[in-house]
Length: 147
Image 1 (cartoon, rainbow, N blue to C red):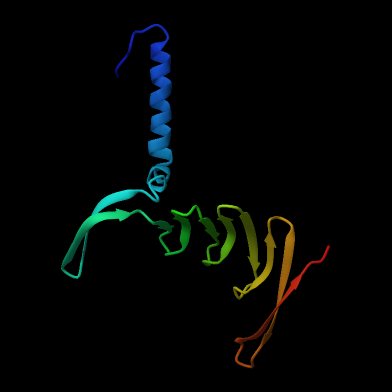
Image 2: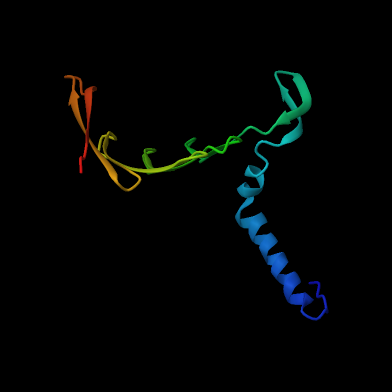
C-alpha cells in the first residue's frame, strides 16, 4: 500500500484511485464503448488471410450466454439495451438515438406469444391471435388503447 504524506493530498489521491477502480472494474464496457467512432489500427485474420490497417471502431454488440443481444451501440449514437425472460423472450427494451428515446415492456402467454406491450410507460397494446387447425398462428391482431 502506498501512502502519500502531503497535507490534504492523501485523501485526494485515494479518491482518484477509488474512481479509477470503479470505472475500470465495475464499468469495463464504458471504456470500450467510448472508443466508438475512433480510428484504431487493427490486424484481422480470417480464412488464412491477414488484413491490417486503420479502421473505424463502428459497432459494439454484447450478448448473453444464450446468444441474446443485450447491448448494441453504434458510432452514430444509436443504442439499444434488451432484457430477456428465462424462455428467451424480450421483456424490456431501451432504444436511444440522437434525438429520441423509447422504452418498451412486454408480456407473453404460456405459448410464448406476445399478449401485451407498453411503450414509454404510456402507449399500451394488446395482442390477439387466430390459429390454423395445426396450432400455428394464422392472424395476429394488435389493439392499441386509446385515451
